[in-house]
Image 1 (cartoon, rainbow, N blue to C red):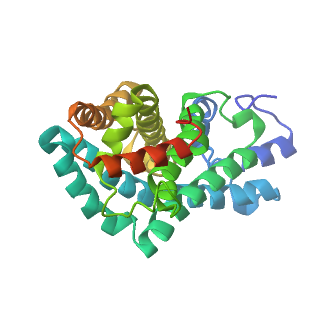
Image 2 (spheres, helix red, strand yellow):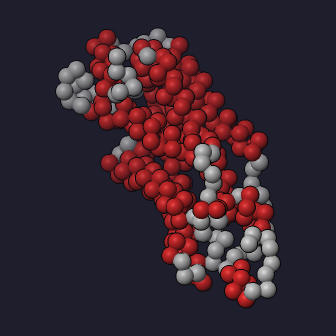
Image 3 (cartoon, rainbow, N blue to C red):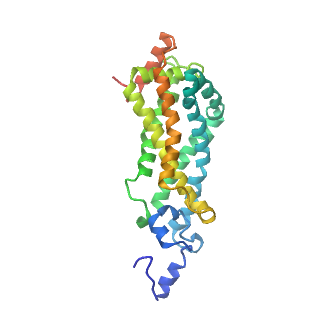
Length: 278
């Protein structure tokens, strides 16, 4: 029996009382409205229904930290439009005071990313099957590609591999790791580097735009009305992506300023990754 049908059966009426008073169309058309709020967890004996609102709050609660990091981190390449690699590197150094300290990297960046990823997967498992978003969808494609490919590859190349003290890398320190490193990758392996930078930026931006829509529908829609339309979300994501990618393009057109010895160490970092192996 569908949700929109009525029944004189007392048990059916009791079950229907467990639903918050939301339009049936919104329950069917936008499964994000479930998010632990279609069911009244207090009256439900189902463990999944009781856990769903908790997991939802955890997943959504990590997003402000992620958005803050993204805003700071992506400002640097966008600044290359105005001042080239010099200004981009200066902005990046300032941003590192937030996201690359011993406390910031662990608790303000990595921990929220892990919490958001794990809790989002858990939320999907807890959501009733008939209310889950069908796979594949643009939200899951963007999220999974970022989480399982683009982000790990980016982190390893730009954060982990440069710390290798063995030759020929010799532990490229933070003071040596600026946007000359990005320029070496772009000019030595243009196709692969553009694929990684553009793929990471696009997947994160679209997942963020779609995620904001879900958070709005879950927590703010009852008070402030419907959120942005699909067209507006596309415009928002594009307005975030475009300055970053044009900044990357500006970097790719600059001549290399790094000494040849340092550039060779940069190249050694890149080829450590399977993406750049000859």
